[in-house]
Length: 324
Image (cartoon, rainbow, N blue to C red; front, side, top):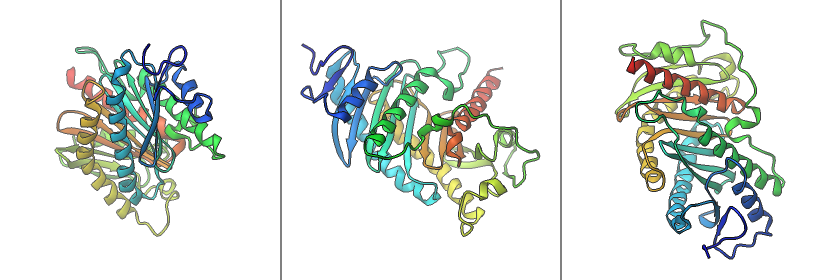
């Protein structure tokens, strides 16, 4: 008998897990739902408590547990690093690779739902590029993980945090006023800055940067836009906010390499996209080449997924143009 086989369509680790417990039952229901990650784990204040999954080879659970523990550690570390932005705690992380994705979603501080989904999550070799934020396999598993976190919060009397912005996914962003008030552009050869500017929106992407070898080369932002400034303390000057995101953009190259090392232990292929979703917005990292990447920032939680799609569409267009 397969280890931990408790009913149709899922396994549990440990095998003796009490499925009548309301927390365990919530994990089991989600694991059996369409589109759910293949492996879901619960991590609470440094302790990996249990996992539920639908694995072709359940003997690989110890490997996936180790990867998810590393993901939880990275989540806690990045939470501290992002705190300087004053946009709330890190509540969701997505590490999107060519053949799957890893997820960490916060229930309460240092209490995480962890997940892994397997399958093609990028364009096939020689095929047209994809907008990564729209890949159905990764998106559905992402939403399922976020739903589970909301269920667990409800069990302890806490409201949802809208991780991923999925609760407001259907909201359409109106075209902003152009030229954009408060726009700041910085460029060297100007090859990309115009494209970055076109993707900005005062309630969508408010900061975009192009980096090579961990050095910021071009950027465009709306940090001085009145609608963006309204969301932060008047004591925090735009210059300080921009300087923080500039440092973060350069540092994300190193963080991406570390997360790629973690991801590679469980999910084949290069890491193409990383999302660091805080209580008020998100930070996005999109790989362009082994040395180049784009960083985006949104500061409205209701539009985190829309901002991700805009950046994903931009990267898709850049790849398509490079092949033309």
